[in-house]
Image 1 (cartoon, rainbow, N blue to C red):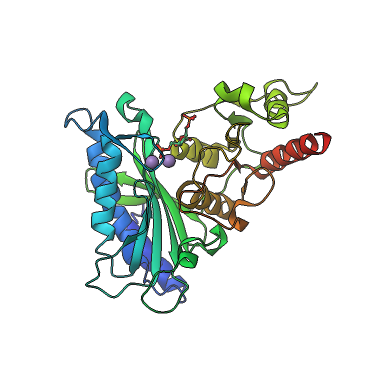
Image 2 (image 1 turned 60 degrees about the vertical axis):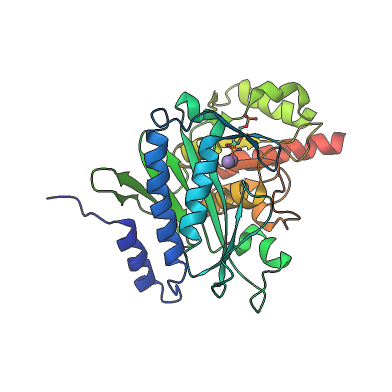
Length: 337
Ligand code: AHG
Ligand code: MN
Ligand code: MN
């Protein structure tokens, strides 16, 4: 008997029936993301053939060389989501300011932030990359989008998710009622439900994920923490290290296997590299919905009040017991100075 086939469209309709409070207004956003994911996936899978590899010669707001695929993915998302009637506008890693919806339409009640292509340095070596998104309600009355609408804490997110363009293309998201995963069947062009109600294993696999090349620039507490993972005390369980260099891939493995993904600050860049609004906050909501924990090393990520669209934040995310252990190590190190 064929396994029950649930498309992402069916699943969203099912969720609306089960959660009457879900007005379905951001259904068109999720469906827009699903369509954009299929378009970007097709391009990522043909990247080497249609010459959209390599640097497009421009730099993004962070002064980072923009890979052509970043531009392409950004254009796909802005184009498709720009037609979603329920949006007031968008925040993108690739655009310095807020992207208002066309003046011709009344602004919708929601705002979306996204990282159109995460892990872009990996795209031309055929390593998994992704897209990350986060949906908020516009809080202020009237048509104007105010700064307070854009800088909301992660706890105010209505939905968050990511697309992983890997050996298969997966769409993983939460609307606050658990985390669910869909795998793209390229044969029929549909995202099919493959993981209902994902939970991060705890205790999970002892995997720590960090770029150890920065060891000399870390704080002493961060160095001690990684030394602890590298060589546990007598009888302590040993760890393995995994680092892909695409946050979506490193996080997805952590969600499925457990462990901890870290992108800490360094002495010269204490806030680290990852952006709060469209990388760390959405992953933090997914992680907590799956029973995990997400912190900046001291505070819960979802409680942080953003102070800028592209604000960076140190990141510790994964199995709760390992994130708590990281927080303890860093606290002791701060106290001992
Ligand atoms: P993006 O491609 O959107 O700029 O994100 C890249 C990020 C993230 O995906 C990854 O975890 C991190 O950069 C890797 O940074 P390092 O190369 O410094 O380890
Ligand atoms: Mn990114
Ligand atoms: Mn990016």
